[in-house]
Length: 158
Image 1 (cartoon, rainbow, N blue to C red):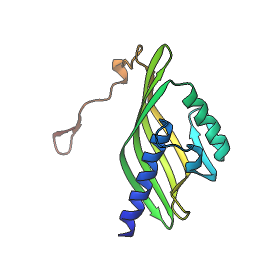
Image 2 (cartoon, one colour; image 1 turned 180 degrees about the horizontal axis):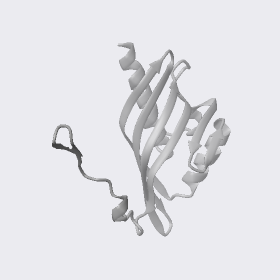
Image 3 (tube, one colour; image 1 turned 45 degrees about the vertical axis):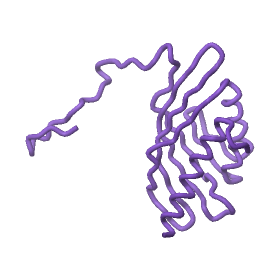
Image 4 (tube, helix red, strand yellow; image 1 turned 30 degrees about the horizontal axis):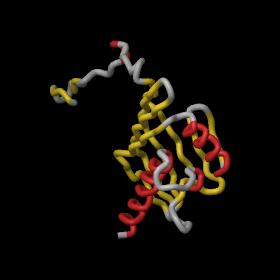
């Protein structure tokens, strides 16, 4: 029963994070991190609530509106009061003169020992970031094989 409660609390934190990024539900995004929390972005590492809030508030201010969706949440490990999660995200961003989309993975460490769950560390790993005009065209050489052939068993695997 404890594991289910832990997983639910960590999952709710991810959904609250997405809602606060979108300006829903009130409160700052930085407040969802521990005092010494770490946010890893492709452009650098940001530490502490104030630094994290500054970076995320700046990103939010650049967009007219956003919508974030968190899916495929998987608990990787639970150890004491810490939970390690991996999830997928989709972000739809509207700016003046352009709209964009991004998706990728969140890698999170959540502390459950406080009054409420908080992120200790969040790494954002974007797989695609583009505007809706450019899209995400693929170079045929970059496309993965749709199937691989298993020589030992002689069958196709999706």
